[in-house]
Length: 246
Image (cartoon, rainbow, N blue to C red):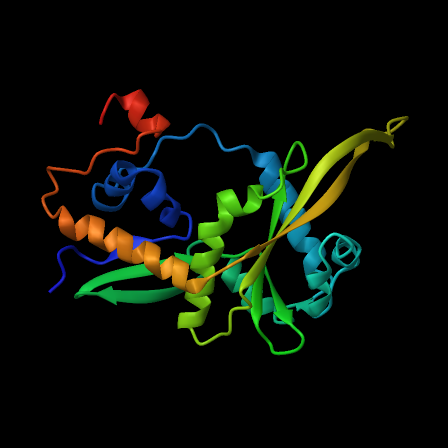
């Protein structure tokens, strides 16, 4: 018999099990999410522009990614998934793709949405490609540090839905490098070009690691079934430090 009602998890939630058990507890059981400021709309706009670009090259490897293969030759093994309707569904944050995990009778619903999918030409295996905009080039290993657990979770979701995970994922970074005039004279709508550089970070992804994190979450919840006694916070959690809780 389950201890709690079905618990919904997202790929980003899995990071919390290592980051801060107290914040994870509050998020899953008390439905108290970490506070955040206004979400910047510019990164979202860049993300949407990258998606539209990929949609023009469905079933192929787009020219920009072919150029980026000089930094990441593995990209040449792939093409963008050719089913535009399915990709549109996977991008919906309330739809996406999901799977159900049962541990000792407790039900976990793992659900997520994706930017785009690459299909390996040799065997049809699926790899995620996620667009990111940054003010400067990412440090080596930065993608794996912040998004590794997320990519592991997607591999688990796809595997549980009968797909073959490729065991690798790609972060496609674009970085602004210059600002140029365009149509600024004698026009009611002056405009400009922002030129972006790009880079790719490849990371290994592993469905089994995601499963280990869900088991760790399960152990945390089951070992502390009394909701009035949450676990202690992570030692470096800035949210708990601000709230003055241990």
